[in-house]
Length: 230
Image 1 (tube, rainbow, N blue to C red):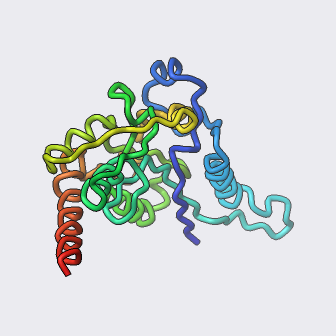
Image 2 (image 1 turned 180 degrees about the horizontal axis):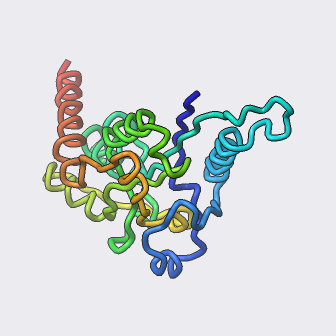
């Protein structure tokens, strides 16, 4: 039985920004010390998957050595045009739907030198389909990193203003949330995913904005305008 689990970059926990800058691209087995209950539970589920795949009923007299075919991806911050889980859609949707409001983002996302690993939702869906269809013999591990692009909030803002020239975007820092984001790697090593099941993102930052977010939000804006006229 195949079991596909969506894990998270929150499963990592780097102790400080100096360490984060020094280690660079993080591998799956490194810095698995999450600082949030969300991250702890993601890591816990990964360990459950490992147990049921490799050690389930290990003392049973009739154990046949077959367990669950557990597979997992540690996703970065997912950018969706339908929901608002991350900085980019928050900026875009606030501009399109409530243009007079500020965007509440963490300082880590607001500082131009701090990058946040992100991915467009179509790529996340693509990754899930690739991994679930991959032959078991090709898989070298149970949990995989995948990466895409890692822009700053300043870059998000610049793209939003380029698309909507009258936008006024400001950031409101939250120190506690910054500490959480600071503990996540800015880059991950996704070499095993690329080698084992052909992972490669289709969307870079520019395409994610121009072909995915902006197109969808403009359509939403046009619908809202028609609704307001009524």
